[in-house]
Length: 204
Ligand SMILES: Nc1nc2c(ncn2[C@@H]2O[C@H](COP(=O)(O)OP(=O)(O)OP(=O)(O)O)[C@@H](O)[C@H]2O)c(=O)[nH]1
Ligand SMILES: [Mg+2]
Image: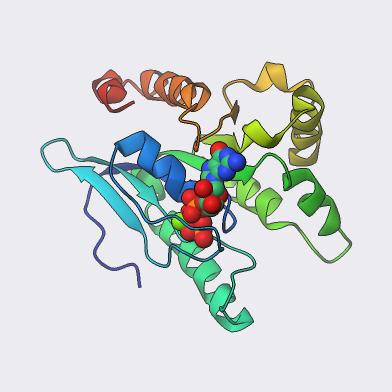
């Protein structure tokens, strides 16, 4: 499934299905990407690379519920995404965990239990355990009224001590559909700068 990956440094977008990864990809790259109202639109990694530069953004398939996809296939997609990130960790400059700002806290709470770790929390810790600098792009903020409370709750669930404003290198509230992604591009720029990759700032 994930064979023809160009060999270059990359920023990956990961997250549950339907959170807006492909919409964000379109905003970041200016390329048209298939997006959809129903979950499970992206089934293959979408790489957007600049051949001369050896840098790309990659939009990975989403986890979790997807219409018309069996439980078994969903597990397989998740396994493939996890393996992709593990195999390419050395090339991944930043991992962007995309979440839906409107629903993420409720979904995390619904799936928190003795024998269950919610996908978003698991993925966040997974990226950090691999020592991949991680940014949470909290998307669909145009649908959120109680912005600061929601973001504080999300920090709490991710094990980041609130208020969220002290985590601006990690938490980036955006609205990809409205084209409002500066909180993310600013944060990515800071990470590139820290990694002495100012040459990549032009892609933001
Ligand atoms: N209100 C709002 N809707 C958004 C925003 N970003 C994306 N959407 C909508 O969310 C839906 C899913 O968007 P996609 O970009 O296809 O989501 P995805 O994460 O790539 O989904 P999969 O490929 O299934 O994993 C579409 O209907 C988008 O228009 C946003 O910032 N605000
Ligand atoms: Mg998609």
